[in-house]
Length: 158
Image 1 (spheres, rainbow, N blue to C red):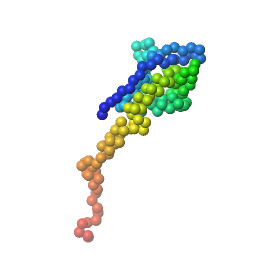
Image 2: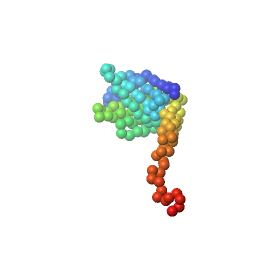
Image 3: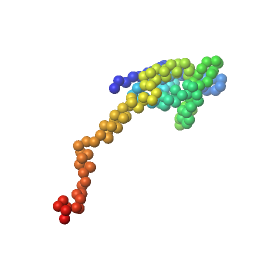
Image 4: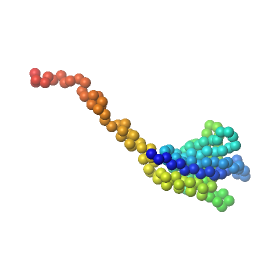
């Protein structure tokens, strides 16, 4: 199966307070062989970038309305008259509130939706084909399906 990758470099803003934020270079990534997930890599000036993976559906919905709970929450808003998407990420290592330009996130998401349309993700994984192959009867199954104990009734009707 052919694998397609859709990536986008962009600058997010890490919100430190209502008055202060710092730029964070990031990469949005999507792979057709992992069709339910989006991957975000934050380059925070260290040797080890920070990676987050969460449901593509969560980000798609979060562009239009608040959604998510727990570790990842996403919602749209306006800042200084421009549309942004806020992502609240929570982990044992800490919490972060990130602001992303809505137009850039939306155009990248549209590209992912053209590669793998919503509702067709499972087809990309071949789950149905894999299950059918796994559950298909084999010649050895005949041995297991035979009655291991012949009937107590005799064949000649005694």
